[in-house]
Image (tube, rainbow over the protein chains, first blue to last red):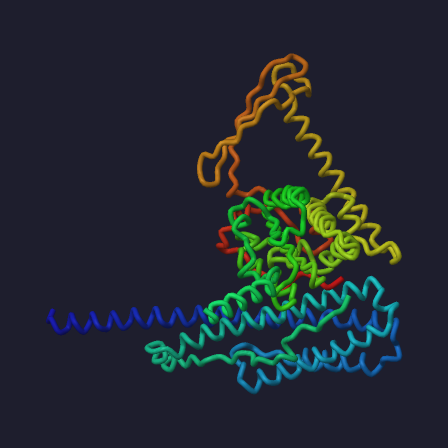
Length: 193
Length: 303
């Protein structure tokens, strides 16, 4: 075999190994982002699942707060309608999700503020527990969003760095969209005891 | 000279202003990392006697693969007990490989508290249970300014609940007595489970105390020596004397702290709180490796 052929084979093998390693690295990072996104969605779902019980308990004590209760139900319906796969997370879709979830957060904040005016409701054991579960869920959402953003940052850095960016463009791998910092939506509702 | 004096003055003011303000980064945790204690008490708010009692309870949770740290100081940085508790859990790697960690944080002058649970702990100690522990064992003492008992009773509550002690499980699994009691069957299940555990405990205890010479349950422990044979293994040599035939019995036992150790009787708790608990491997010392994954579970508030 000619020397030049051997060198050519060696170069192809090195490029092949690099491509294999680089591609697998990006796939692993992609899966991590998908897992983090699944956690975000399950936390959103967890919050949505708490709402019917919460509304029922509040309704028993504050029935004439119809507007606030309907606001929560409506916001919940809107938020649960949006269910987007991580691969379809464009900036526009992310804005839609953030807007819907933000709306739900503020509707829940209003509901909690209303509860302050009803001492019997505040003292109700079921309400207190739903309140603590809601608070825990809001915290979980905050943590899982942060974790998602961390994984997206890691993925995007990997995809955009040279020479991985060449591989990414060959295989059609694109950067992912993180949550935008939105203080009002990210901050967990403050619950007074 | 004037510059030096001004600098010293500002340093002193800064030190005084920020004394007792702790973040997960600056709170002294060396003794916790070295596994000497589970109580972080930099402002000496808790008395040593209470710290020791809390330590005994918390360190005993290690055998169930649960690591619980209690931190008490005057102020949390940013007046945020949640961020402090979760940050401390991550910083220390509380919970070991299974992430079964609990951090209890109290800032006496901020008048805030938080119980944070690691991701592996959430199914055993739900947010509602954390809240009940706070409401029933912590807050009444906090309102009275009795920090020692607030933390000791909280530790007892956590320890009792995780060990399926009947009084704690019943107290924490039920809503307050003013609520309708809809947990009759669950109560019986708990009682049945607790009775089985007690029976098993009595049987094991009798077996261990049976003299191999005369067959009577009269063995009495007279000496026990624990020697380290490797990083995680200990040899325990126990000497027993029979009160009936006065024969001496020796028993050798190898304790592997890295292996599974937590037969917690999980079916009892699991059936109610949505998760079954089998034996688990010990978290080991606070190496921080693999532990400290806190996803936001827990509850807290102000008093």
